[in-house]
Image (cartoon, rainbow, N blue to C red):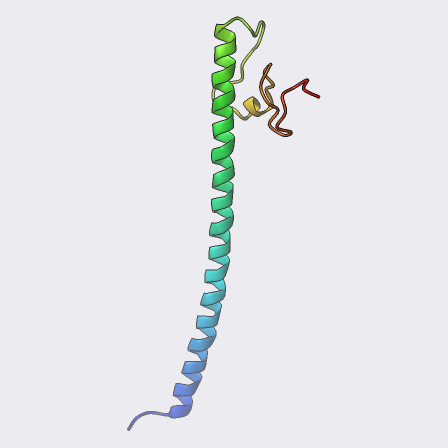
Length: 99
């Protein structure tokens, strides 16, 4: 009348196994999302650094302080390698020639 309890127990066991696999997959997805958030933050910081360097370079070009400077394309990653006079070095936090 109520069905075979052995079959029900096997089904419950399969459901528990599936739930365990789903939790493991969810944990991996959470970890991936956290890593992606960290990457997005770094990209935003680099974009801000590029924009700041572009602004400073434009001001120096307008003042005539950067003769023969060929700026990279707007927003290009090559801006990260540009060193401008009187601007702090990104890696060390010191102005060039300040040592």
